[in-house]
Picture 1 (cartoon, rainbow, N blue to C red):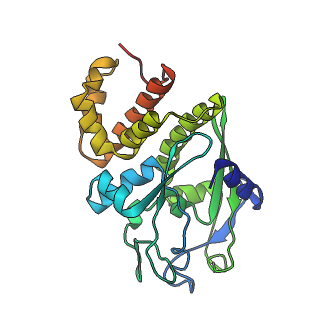
Picture 2 (tube, one colour; picture 1 turned 90 degrees about the horizontal axis):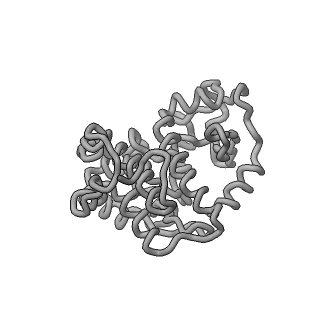
Length: 257
């Protein structure tokens, strides 16, 4: 789905003000449990891929090849990996089981948000956001549950690291969109490597001596090269700064030597 189509979809939904509440719960006691985990059109962000592939204990190249279909945003050319559903009459998510989500602790941000939608816009002081309620005929989670505001829901679903990383990625995409031209194929390839394949990006950093070309502290270098989720997050943050520097010649978070 293009960014314009996503925006139109959100605009068609009822908006939820920051201080408004909604009642919702999803658990095995809800009659429709697992029904929303099939026939999904689910794009994955770099942070989603980071969390999922580490949860599964596999490399990023294997994860992308096994679980996604790579598409692209038409206006920017940015890569858009879509989670691939399993074959079958219901086209279930590859991670759903009768007991629920097998990667629940590291499930994608979109799954955490449901039944909310979040619309964002770049602002001078950061990111402005709006929330929307998504009501689908099959979903019975609204019948009873905990009453929360949007931000209470975000806290409950541990969405802060997802939003922080995804907003940074959207900012880079917005900068490219503002040029009016999609990325060259070589830059798209670099984005896949530097943002969606963190383990491969570390190899590039070492082989191409990337750190020797930028002004970076030893502490940040060590964090980036650490093989852990925290290290992956540091590497993704660096990758976003690096790609901004490569594409535009400057970056808020990184400078050339």
